[in-house]
Length: 252
Ligand SMILES: [Zn+2]
Image 1 (cartoon, rainbow, N blue to C red):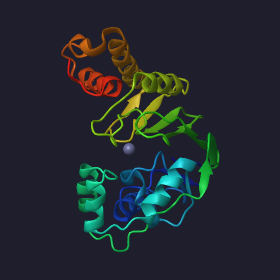
Image 2: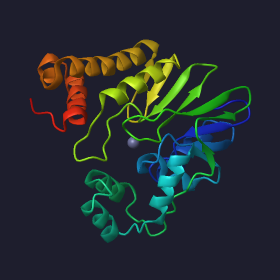
Image 3: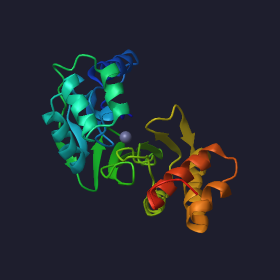
């Protein structure tokens, strides 16, 4: 988003090439200069492109800590495979990293320098963007970026399931706390990290309602919640993630 003086990027992209192509499009559109990148969490597909720009990277202190670990790694194929074997990297992510970053000899992972614990405001001239820590199951460092003046909310991946586990999972407590927190932003537009759409107020509320409905089903029906979800594919998927989080598997 941008104000009169500056543009803030939410996320640093999956690779320097990815970020550079996005920046080229912003330049084509005549946007004000990019003054900072705000990361919603540490995952590679949101952060590994930051080095394409020489601007401050704003992030939660846990995001910086994890990216310092990532920056210390050897990114050769062999070392990446080793981390898949010992559980530090997901096989799916390793495959995607090889596609997005085929040559990683000069990969430079930027460790964020402008850190926040709870929230941090970024002035863009006439509008302010606020990065705020919300946590949740997907990643403990998850932040959202909120533009209070127009009610836009960048959710990153915070509503998604946790992936760095043997099976993807959500927890009832995690979903309830996060949904309550996100509702308080009363967003008029919401953008999720991997959705190809911008949700309006109605669509955003429906998304939060569905997460709560899945949590309700698991609390009420326990392991029988899958059957209680009926035929709704998205609700069934959410219930499945919650069953893994609560019981360790989805089996009834
Ligand atoms: Zn993520």
